[in-house]
Image (cartoon, rainbow, N blue to C red; front, top):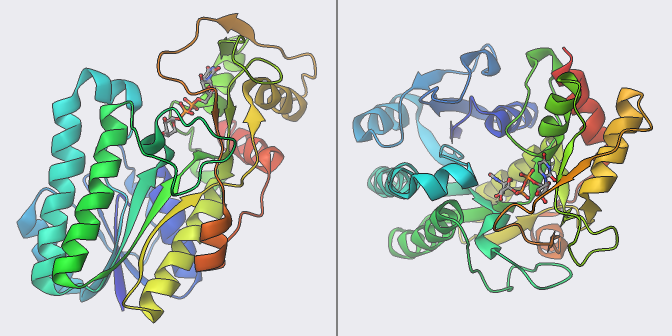
Length: 319
Ligand code: WQD
């Protein structure tokens, strides 16, 4: 059974491809290389350069490679960009998924894993976010992920394929430092950028209702997240009735100041401190996953901690 990984040349996608291969799965990558890098696709894995918006490309890839399952990670993922260009996000993420679902239905593809996000929850007012916490996305990006989950559930009910949507919390770290990946515009790489520029890291607000006043997130190592996809693929291959939406996090909250302190320890600057700037609009004070459902349903839980994330990200950054 061959799995099509859309966005497989991206930062997360490349880790998913590597983990699926290590699990003995046959994989083909579809990526338009808009942000993906072909160097991330390992030798022996076919790379189809094209978009999920292109039905002909999808038809050819599915037919030629005998695709029976899809792991869909292709899409736009920047919250700020989605606020500035919502219609582009609706096109790429929502229309892109619609075209993909049409191809899945028409080819009788039996299984789909979808890359969703904690952004579907918006401003959660709970200690740990469960999959039953109400979804009130605050950005067009988060909206595209929530709509995507709902489109998948409706299409699956009508066309009979199994599916798992995985809501990623804050993904960090690297498994392949030799690729020299510098990661997306997220906290840890942004701290590295400031260090490289000889500037103190920025802290967006220290007056949140949290113990040290800075925002708390649930950071998850990209290798652990990749293993969550492997667990989903195993489940889908075994149970064609699977219909799941699960959080992927560690269930551990870490503040911005704690991240900066860990970076300081890793880079050999224990005095490293942030400079406080204004709050960033739309940032929840706290976003931490309840990770019970994914453990119960997929037998997955994270193994690596924040130190592992920062060390591997730094190794990749300084490569
Ligand atoms: C983390 C915390 C910042 C930079 C977003 C999306 C989410 C997912 C990951 C996509 C926040 C603070 C940051 C800095 C800081 N996206 N910060 N100084 O916003 O939790 O999540 O990215 O797929 O859907 O919402 O992640 O890494 O941007 O920020 O103080 O220089 O670090 O304010 O509290 P976020 P982030």
